[in-house]
Length: 316
Image 1 (tube, rainbow, N blue to C red):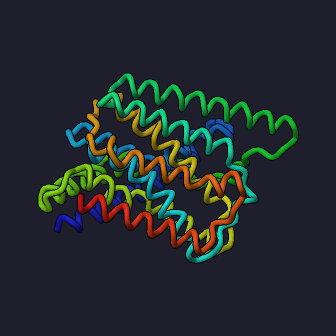
Image 2: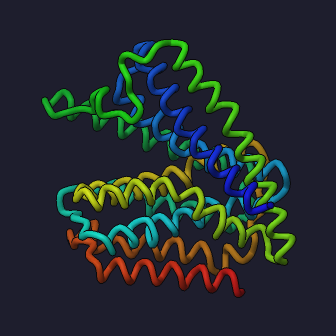
């Protein structure tokens, strides 16, 4: 029964997160917020809402391993699994999408995150540092996008945003917002409580459950999106999506959760998992800087590495 609750909690989280994005995007555009700002902030926060609610709920309930494991495990899964499995289906061309700057920022964010982890706890000080860095990055992205717009280059249009419906009535916008705001905490409650029970039943730590079950579950939307893009031969932006998602996980999710409740760092994170996350990020160097395509051989390598990592975590 507990596995059913896990699936139910995850399903509610994903559906509620999607509803929140649709409601928030359409509300923001209706009140006059530019599409550029919506794409950089509201869509990014909305799509990460399930991970955020899980981390906040886990931190408040005294299971920081699920909160931190969710983020660290998701970042590792995003590189090895979310890029690996689609590459088994079709070659992903990276030469058409310049991700060098965002990649360097992501790696720098990972190093900062690891440095803060060695303090032994993610408290309000760490939270403020992470969110300040995020604010600087978003500010620079807005400045750069506005500069491109002034130079006559294309800026994000309303039609390019996920969930935009110019004809959506106000009652539907409000309904989406309510479903999202009610469903997210409900789904987080179910998933965190069920994951904690599974950890106790199988004699593993909440950290292991966070790194595996919860992390893979919250990475499923990115995996599904990337698989569909690969099948449609439109996967050139998948690398950029993974980089952006990982950066947001580290800075925004843990930054906000740390302000709400302190999260002690499991020593195992410092010995192993954080370094695996960083190593997985560094594996992207050939695709980012050398413009290598992510072909089937790389797909096999990345997927096998992830399965090996999960095996080590579960048997440690």
